[in-house]
Amino acid sequence: MTEEKYTYQTEDESLHNLFAAYVVTAIRRQKARYLMKKSREQKMVVSLDEMLESNMVDPALITFFDEMDRLFDSEATLENIICNDMLLIGILKLSDRERRILNLRLVRKMKHEEIADLLGLNKNTVEKAYERLIKKLRAHMRGEKGEEF
Amino acid sequence: MKNFKKLLMLAKMGDPKAMRQIVDMYSRLIMKESVVDGVFDDDLRQVLYNTLLMCVRLFEF
Image (cartoon, rainbow over the protein chains, first blue to last red):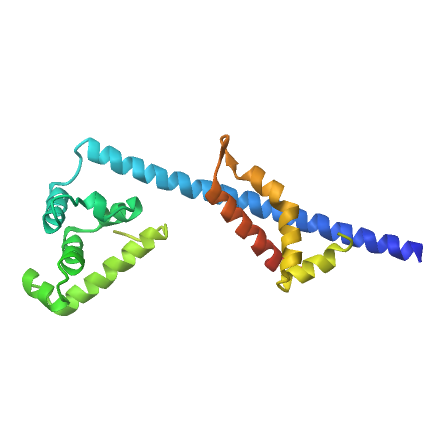
């Protein structure tokens, strides 16, 4: 009887130890993953700041920023509109045409047809391009790799 | 805590008291791991608590 009890306790202890090892490993791995993701995000923000400071920004982008700023009141700037740095970086990576479509669709609230007329494109092309750029931005926000801009 | 297996099974089934007991067991470890370069990171603490809950759900015995 005593022996049975002793065995039972040992099994329980070994299960506890196994679970503890499982938790410790999972927590340390998760911490490493979290820190890696955080450092990657910080690097991206720093590189954006450096890019803006060193005037390496494409003139087309500056035009885009100005265009966005003009659409809002004088106190609003693009930085105020897009508070999320990750999103801003994602938009910076889009092509000129994609940025233009995004701007017309979201800021000017134009329909796909109107955008197509304005840019001299087919309505389907605009729809597909808009869908694709939203997918790109979503993938970028999720931190997915391999999404070519 | 007399029987860890029973406690773990109850936690797996969603018993809040059992879950609380397991969380209490590992909260010191989580608090320790939430400090990065001498600074406490509250977001990391949340992530690690979620990891612990996942461990309870996924651990097989």
